[in-house]
Length: 450
Image (cartoon, rainbow, N blue to C red; front, side):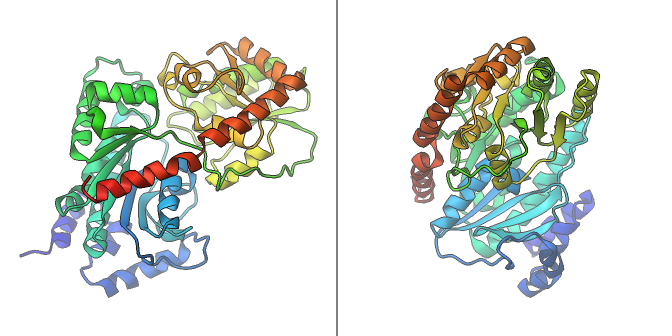
């Protein structure tokens, strides 16, 4: 009878997916695997300075994410927490920027980068094909790794929801599955591609969401508003938990400020997508630029597809902001912490009439952790979690209101000091240190059949 890996390989070969991942994984012989992957592993970025090894003696866990591990705070936090207690953790992920494909050990976690992330999709079908291609490639790799490791748990992070089906073989052989919903896919799709809630695509994605949730043993969702949405349409309440994207003190500890250039830096770190309201923030900055002549607005992140970054750069030029609005590349999360520590004001300008109204803003707590006051659009989700003792709200979509809020925080020392103190207290009460035991208990309970 044909070996399972070889059977899968032929299917992938027909689809043109056997490249980096396929060439390494189809071999049934472990020595062949080591030899064929050694050159790529030497080229991988390894902060520990050693090649990946299996190591450890705890549970065997695999995480799957269609994102770059280095920049995904949520995935890194889970994986490193498990690794620190002695679990063996593999993460199947994307590469981005100039990071090589291949396997690498990062802080006790073995990361397998199997596909490069391109962000130039302009249509839904280009985006969908890249997701399907990742699904198939990750399924091949996970099957091969599971035959070697026998995972106890597979933790799958959306987007998309259907990535859970990459874990068909581990599930078939007894592994437990978690689906971690970072974003509600139907709502994200409608925002990204301007589709209506009653479109056939949105209806299809709600069906996929429900099927994906039914396939797994437990669903984690990233905020309480989305929890209510999910349990109303896709998941039994008893099978669903909320874990915010809590700030991790291991990365976002209080860092020393090192910048001494006399500039006033306003910062936004995140994806450049329409629902983030970055055009509103640029217009607001144009209103204060003459009153704060040493101010600069720095945006760190990656474009979410299309020409939005070019449009934002053109808007900055039209408003006479050349040289004062800077578009910076996305950074690994530990470098983001350094950049935030050297900023003077954080902004979260999301649109309340879009996907951003219920999407939790992790960057708010990241700003707080570094003593950076934050001006926040008054969305439904941020009003649910924060109040005026810890952030300065402004009316969503109103660049004049945002400009007024920024000027107030900049010019009012008492307000600024109060927001910083309130932010520190909020982080102390809501950090990952407070919730990580609950996550570890969930993993342990599920793995024991609970």
